[in-house]
Length: 200
Image (cartoon, rainbow, N blue to C red):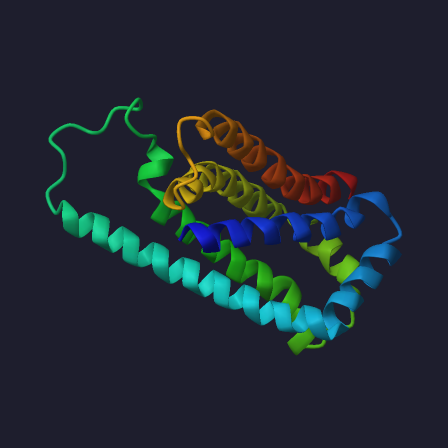
């Protein structure tokens, strides 16, 4: 779980770095060129399968872990856990992960499926602009990024703990790094739909 989580974190950074072109070039030419490169480069296409495997493994592993946790305590606590012992988000990683998965399916349908399989005539930039002109889709995207932030904040630290790297000396550094990552990356993604929605 920890290894796939960190792998997916690296993907988020790479994906965001490409999407930043949406904010820096209002003509869309740079983003369209980037999208074309991503669709036609052989190495990138191979990495897509690696990424798909990483997502599937992470999802299945997370579902099994959630099932094991529930089986370990079939009877609920008499009193709910205090915020000091664990946060609501740390206890509901399966729920936030499920919502993020739904978002991912909708997101892939809106862009990858439309362009690669259905052959839309719109450029990728125009598809983005059209999608983020819709208030429902824009709101769902931003909400998903907020949930992703909480998911990342707990998952980032848990990943290093699973790998045995979160000892007393590194714990504060990893906690601060995880917090910064879980704020900056989702905020970067969320700024894109907000930018297009406000600009329309």
